[in-house]
Image (cartoon, one colour):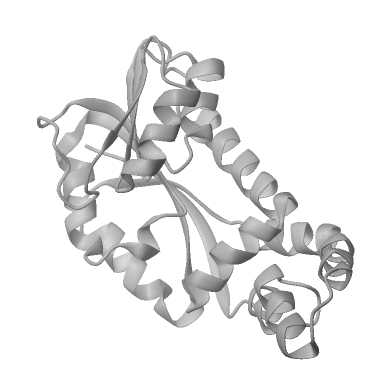
Length: 227
């Protein structure tokens, strides 16, 4: 339920999404500076903007975006595909690539939807070349973060960097709260419908907003390296 509300909030709040993605890909650039001419895989590529950003500004030899949604993949190939950039349908827990195919694997705001996180992590490690990087970011309930840590540790990959970016979410929500509230008020809706819309939008004072402000829900990013 928390993940569903967060995704809905991102759709109604461009500032939240922009803040998160900007930070994620800046981290990507910082910890994998030498990817020019290398191979990159983004698992859970969604609408394709992240993979397109990487290809344009970080200059890898190739980047492949994988997503379970055939509609999303079709849209991505229409909007972004070109020399060294492609999108395909695929299952994060059963990647259709040879062992040690990529120098970098990227996964942002997607893993909370997976049915078997250990299977996904096993696939990440399998397709990564030795010395390759795994850049990962997602949210979890605070009381489930220990499970995530154990899952990441079980891969045997080295932890290079960890960052709590929950404050970035709160900052974005604060910045965009009034705009979203005015947008909701502009619709002729009964109170019965307006209150759920406020929750989905993460307006100040809602449960969704408080989850992040109080740390009940945590959003973290990690950089790991295969050894």
